[in-house]
Length: 94
Ligand SMILES: [Zn+2]
Image (tube, rainbow, N blue to C red; front, side, top):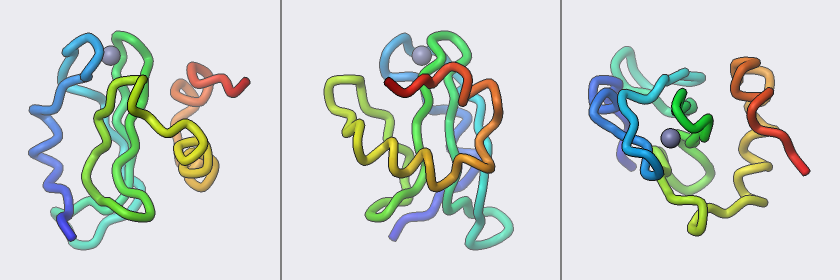
């Protein structure tokens, strides 16, 4: 499985508005320089993108139409205690 080099995250852009760099928050690490789980946040449109889940440890930078909402809600709730307030307040669940 691929793990994330945090440096790599600096070049990732939001798939919706191409804004970058995305704000990144890391939750777990597999080594000092390898992120396992975290979240990317686009300060322009307010979307967030998970890093790491059950099947992948690469960021999932999908446009809205390809996102699996139920899966993401489960992921979000798993890490809720570590997710910054400003992301939570943007992401209102229906
Ligand atoms: Zn954006």
